[in-house]
Length: 135
Length: 135
DNA sequence: TTAACTGCAAAAGTTTTGCAGGTCG
DNA sequence: CGACCTGCAAAACTTTTGCAGTTAA
Image (tube, rainbow over all chains, first blue to last red; front, side):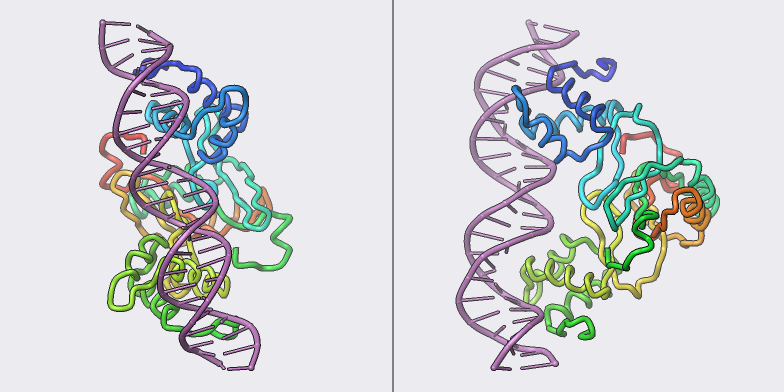
């Protein structure tokens, strides 16, 4: 931890704890989560800690929904995120399913893709049979 | 156009025109773009038009960068967006490169993916040789 | 001891909403 | 004429920044 020049403080611990508990969460969700309890954290502390922890590689983020990125612990495991635009559910899928895509992108564009960083939009099995909406 | 119960108005025309000209743009960019000129559009009008036009299927959006979605015309053509986190460049790639991914997701999760809706994060050929940053 | 960190408050930026008036069809 | 739209202003949010005081190492 302090190999990166970071101190272990109580607010920091609580941010990491919240991420461990939630799996992944947007800054907004974390702020809401940590504003409660006997020692509420101000939003600025949450944002600053996400930034410093991300800089040290102690948290990562991926883009799951429309707005802000979702943060998670590195231990949370790599997977693809499938976001259903019918029900909003997030399904976690094995990254191997995107192996061909990554290989294609590398060979055709020389692009080194991080496929676990983004969410794949679509319709889950429960919603794909239903009516068609414009997201 | 008015099959969807929409009227053709001057602000609406200018939003579509701007999208045609820009290819794809975030609301923020559009607001900035349309706030200029002899008949500046207020932000609220731009946002409301993006919403109504998207509802009618006359504009679409995809998630290219961290924040807001990028809007574009349906005629703008389907492609994958490769976003380099080194230089920020957006590369357009053929959607067929993701065919295997889509098939995998359907067979393993019953998930009907829209692979042109999201951006694929990674490093372009020019940046992948260089130093490693935390995005 | 001191550089890093926190809490608070204020600022900045984006998106939404209310409302009175204008206009397309 | 009537429903849809617009412009303006204000509100609601999310995120950033400044600063003085606190604390981990």
